[in-house]
Image 1 (spheres, one colour):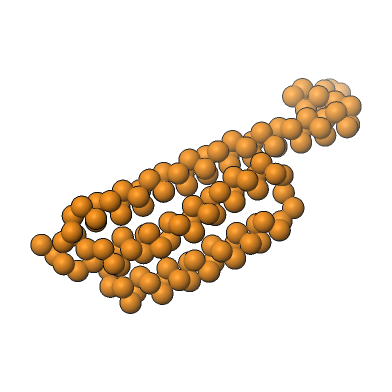
Image 2: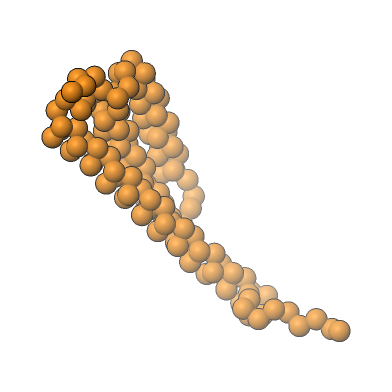
Length: 124
């Protein structure tokens, strides 16, 4: 059985360190940004999951080897679970953005005195 990890650690670990810095910077900027609270909560949770996913993914690619099948499968199972969580949060963010868009559209319609759901009737 192969005792080497999928990729050499000298490739994976520096890339993971850079990714950690990028995700942490993104998270810090996100926390200071002006956006709806629901969007900020979803994206903050997404950022924290990414902060945990990067080192676990680096371990899956560059540290753990298939020679220890139990640990190898455990680490990859965690990576897959976290990726599923990220995709779920992305879908939730998409639905939340649609909800926020509809709310703003309705506010604008009320402000201008027309229903946004009914198109303007033009003179023909």
